[in-house]
Length: 251
Image 1 (cartoon, rainbow, N blue to C red):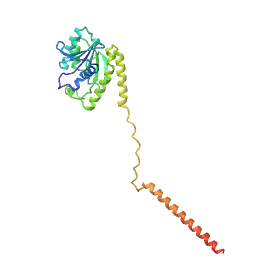
Image 2 (image 1 turned 30 degrees about the vertical axis):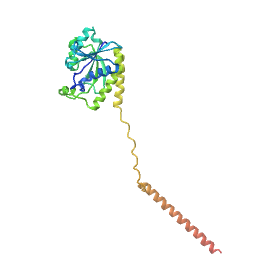
Image 3 (image 1 turned 180 degrees about the horizontal axis):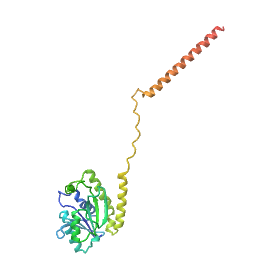
Image 4 (image 1 turned 135 degrees about the vertical axis):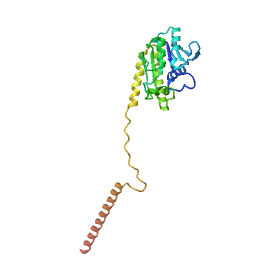
């Protein structure tokens, strides 16, 4: 893999919005690897080079729907084919917490992918898709992607990016199948955790007794025991008195 592109919108206004998931992954990877991203006027993007592999990192600095031109220019300049390009982008069809890799296919209405495909003249580049969820209404999509995710959604997106970052070195080394297998295996494990039934609730404990007051059943049992003991003691006393009377009459 020779070029990794993160999609998003530049500027403070958009930096925490869902549409910038591609930016988030590249920025985290650059920070982890010490790769410096510099603004390059020629490519109209932030550009850096991952030293261990020589792969280029690219964050287009136009809006998402015009991402294709920087990708085309850098790929053309360094003679990089579509099959050697990985585009990281937000994915409406996946829930937050899901990350998957594929090559080619449709663009699913993503304007950034649409522009890249048109500029490259090919759909054969690789995609790393970061799930952001769907608003449930096609008319609400534009507003949805340009707003911040909830705290819970953000946690899921961050976790998915973390898993994707674990397999990115495999992708940069050219082992896309290995990266795909590892990421998707992790995804299945996470799905099992998310869908697992909650543990059974512990049995309800008896209410504690108040100090000096036994539970009704216990009190009744103790009362019966006391009455039984009292009757036994009275019978024993009568027998003793009767034996003494017989002894006195025999004298």
